[in-house]
Image (cartoon, rainbow, N blue to C red):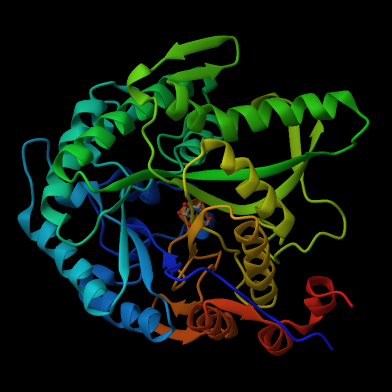
Length: 442
Ligand code: BGC
């Protein structure tokens, strides 16, 4: 039997990613809080409630878990509505709380990455039209300055926006997240404001902290035409790929937003990324379908036989991850995997999902692709947006009512990977022998 260990470069970042609203609990001053109170918005009427109770102090035990499990980094986000509860009010206690958490990471020997915006907006901002109103640009810049001044002692690694492309698709095309609109034209306006807000924040961060490394976490969805020989499937796949995957990040290279039938110049956004943050979850097939105009005539699905989670939301498609990194090379900056994971309460797919994705990352690293770190989504089960507590992405299981955590086998596998700074055939034999032959064919 083959015996091998694949290794990563020294200093590689291994961690998990979280976001404020999903873990803190008692966030009652943002658009998501309001959204959760409305009937029919969240599956089974779930609410974020106490979430993982990080605001109540349980971040300590969870950071202990992460550190003991060999993780040397953590990506978290700050909640805008806590720091700026009203347009003219800044909350020093909230900033202190984040300072304490970042100090907590440092004391545990972990590098922090801080995201400034991970989907949620303060209610006061929402009432001004949120990201539809270009007033958001100076607001976001000011917020960024306050946060960076307050936290710069603890980190140099900043992520301005989490998945602006995902936010646009789900909030403004599918209407599943606040503000719940289905208006692709309006989404172009929001995209423009987000690109400009990012550019303003990028400059502000560098003014305050010249050594900062600033980027965005992009959602890359790998898409394959359903029938390779059918031109309409290629067309549908192409338009979705360009709009979802490419429009935003390319504007950060050359300052041009290429919408269908329209170009918008955003020159201030050119060259405003120091690393490329990549969130990758899955790969889908795309078939041309006249019945889905809202999805630009491209119906997405998993092919028969795909390794799909029991919830059917993501499939284990490691080659799509390799493709995502390869695609990310065009930006010519180091890549950080800012999210990667799968919903799997039973932890049946996750071990092989982790092992196979990390193997793909290693393939890239071996081509000397500058991949610098990996943040698994996520540490502990958390509030999964419109899917509430129904989808479980944690290395640790959480009973949100009792706040009791229980380790899943994947947590041990990931700990072995982090400690080894690599992946071995022994680990595969132990946690996911079913993919041994696929990963190391003999
Ligand atoms: C988001 C996370 C979310 C995860 C799993 C990502 O797109 O950034 O907030 O929990 O997907 O669905």
